[in-house]
Amino acid sequence: MNYQVFKTSGALATNTYVFEDDGKIYIVDPGFGIGKFVSDKEVYVLLTHGHFDHIMGLSELNIKKVFISKEDREMLTNPSLNFSQLFGKSFSFNGDVEDIDEHFETIKAPGHTMGSRIIIIDDLIFTGDTVFCSTIGRVDLSGSREKMIETLKTLNERFSKMDKNLKILPGHNEQCTIKTLFKINPYFKTR
Image 1 (cartoon, rainbow, N blue to C red):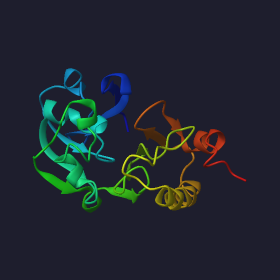
Image 2: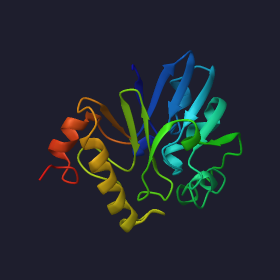
Image 3: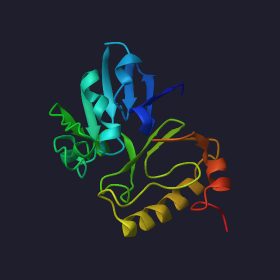
């Protein structure tokens, strides 16, 4: 599947992904500034988690529906939970929100946040801030080290059984394939 990636959220350089499927436009993790890259057409928004650098672009979009995990849903409406208050933004979103697990193929991936999700669409794996190509995400921003350890075990097992050419699309930094992930990420290296 074809997709575009845009750097959003200023210096935080969030990867915001845009793709079209069945005539619908989807945006994954819209950081602030995404509005200058997309038209005013109606979009469906998929969120890997609820931190502010992945959600603040919601206010710039013509949204049909937003999908996020039940666990992270409150982060959309609570600036102290999504950490926007720490950056002087105080962002909240009160639009139509649905449970991402009911509509898309996901892997529950608590650790970075308790409701983090890996979203799988065709040959694309959106990992948010759970997994980057050469490391993993932080666990000290409403997450859990213990849950991240469990998530990494699950992901190692799942990814090892998947096509090694599938693309890993993280919330920051560069993209890679599962094959590359297992070569360069110490949390995924085969032993």
